[in-house]
Image 1: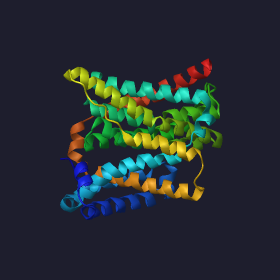
Image 2: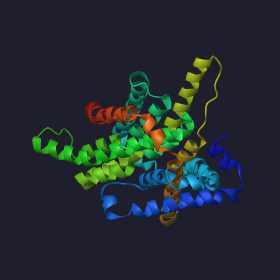
Image 3: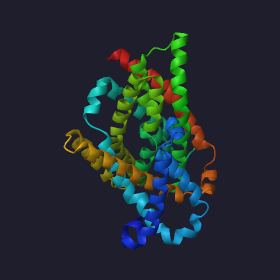
Image 4: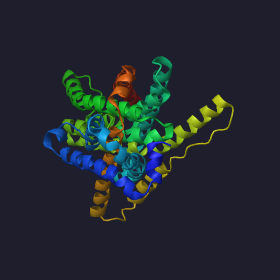
Length: 351
């Protein structure tokens, strides 16, 4: 029986030590993420939570694990799914209208091409474990750490595989945050930049990993670029639900061919909850103050899940992963830059 399952079956009092521990890490991470330097560099609370979790998980947590493991497993499983559902309150269907058909097509092509490339390069060229390749692909193609965490239940990845995938998002998303504004300014000054500020904002939102990183990169160019980047990114986040359902069906089909027996599709119910929450939020029935409160709660839940992931990740397992996951992330980053620009220009020329 795995830790996550134990967390679901044990009485609530047995979860308390682990939940208190993950909540403490989450609270400190959320507070730290408000510090000016970290805000300016797009370091999110989720990133801080997993880093703090890994540090603690490889030091003091070994003594706390016997009492805290049940609650940590509950945070990593149930609270994660609840957090993905509430994540829908950050989006509305009206966001799609703001980027138009062009933005939706660009997002779709970037997502599908990046994930397919990750699957092929990771498993066929680099010889990576399939789950590692898929988790890195999900983080690069959709919405960073949140996408990695949401994909984990579908592919049934291990904690160290998830942690490696999140690490690639942190490294290359942070690099993109600084590189994109420099690339735009350099292109404008050299006279070869084919996109205006809004167009480059769409490119940024369609190719940079984390929402916080998109905000930092877009606003570093201009306010119009930042607005376009955030809206495009939100539409990309909205594609998480159909992506999870499609991936589940694809994996089940592959298992059926391999075993000769019919495999069942893992239905990620929380993905449908996410879509329902987006649709509900689009009706604007809740007061803005309540929505903000629920979004803050969502941040807490996701940060607790990331902390739990970090606590159960062992540095030795990360070392054993070797250089191949990072090489895959490098290749995907190059594709997001070059291929993403070609997709943007191509779609704009045709639509």
